[in-house]
Amino acid sequence: MNTLHTLSRQQLELGAQVIIGYTPGSNGTSGTSRPPKPFFAQSPEEVEQLIFDDTCHYNLAVYLTKKEVTALGKRVLFATLPTLRSIIRLAVEHQVNEGDVAVIVRANDTEYALLNTLAEMETFLNGRTPAMSQEDREQLDALLAMNQEERWAFWKEAFETCIRCYACRQACPLCYCATCAATANQPQWIPVAQHALGNTEWHLMRAMHLAGRCITCGQCGEACPMGLPVHLLAFYLAETVQHEYGAASGLTLTETTPMSVYKPEDTTNFIR
Amino acid sequence: MEPFEPKIIAFVCNWCTYAGADLAGTSRLKYASNVKIIRFPCTGRIDFMLLQKAFANGADGIIVSGCHPNDCHYTSGNYHARRRWTIYKSLLDFTGIDTSRIAFTWVSAAEGSKWADLVNTTVETIRQLGPYTDMQELIGQSTHEPQ
Image (tube, rainbow over all chains, first blue to last red):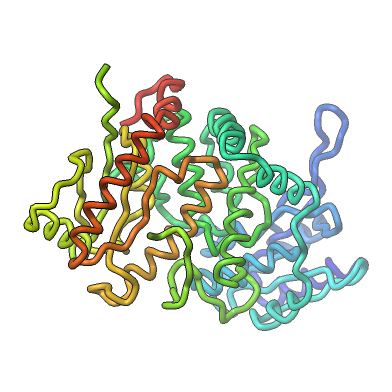
């Protein structure tokens, strides 16, 4: 019996309806094991299957806004740092209320801690903001070093490859709109067929709608079945917003939405 | 061969730039006729998707214009628009879409001559750049026609 299971069972006894955590991934056909997969534990027996270690990295906050999950009642989430940031951001956007969610975090390599309130989550995040992964940093810098034609060639190929499965949207904890503008058809902003122009518009729109909100968990890129680095669009805008307006997302409960507010003294150098 | 006549779409606000363009007309200022003006209540209403649609449907250049900061009829629409354009422009730069084809400007209701100059210089810039084919190429490679 470890503390993770004890904590989880206690929470179920105290009235939580579901523990959303991880369970070992299935083995792939090539003999390689897949990363731990999400697991919903609703009974003490199911709790036994939960794990939470270094290999657990899916952002489970994506389930918080699904109506099937909100209908369950109080939820307890296993939270990595990006998951915590997602919850803070969802709270800022009034998608998660105090008392709806508690999280179990890894306080260090061996210990787990329960955070019951949003304020506790905010405090836990303080000083624990991970930087972009080295791989992402390098790819982003490589793109920024290119000239305009090279960048367009890169993204054009990516957008032509996209199969518009919307896995990026589904994996994103902040893409929670009940009706996405990409699938709304009155008016139809983006042609639904999988072709390069619609794909381009889709990815630009997704990036714009996440500007100032993306918490840079990178789940969209990881979810992409075609292996496209679509997360870099959102990462780049997150950096731009940080640079232009000094606003990061998902760190404090009092933060604003940079694209919904303004300052008269905002500066630009391109508007004549 | 006919010289290339660029198609320019101008997204302008009702209260400043549209009135400015009106003033250019009543002042009998001559300017290039390549521009098609679309009037909006406010720059705050000009969604970035409208610009995408203009390019997708064959615009060679775009003008986006509204009230100077602090002059917005609705107090703050242009401030919101300014943030949006800043982010949108950096996204287009990042993806390699040619932002030199979009002119972001402030033109007040009193600046009829600024409007005429703006249209002339934009048309000249786009004429030098030639027809915009990036988005059309995307359509050409697709199996479905966009709507």
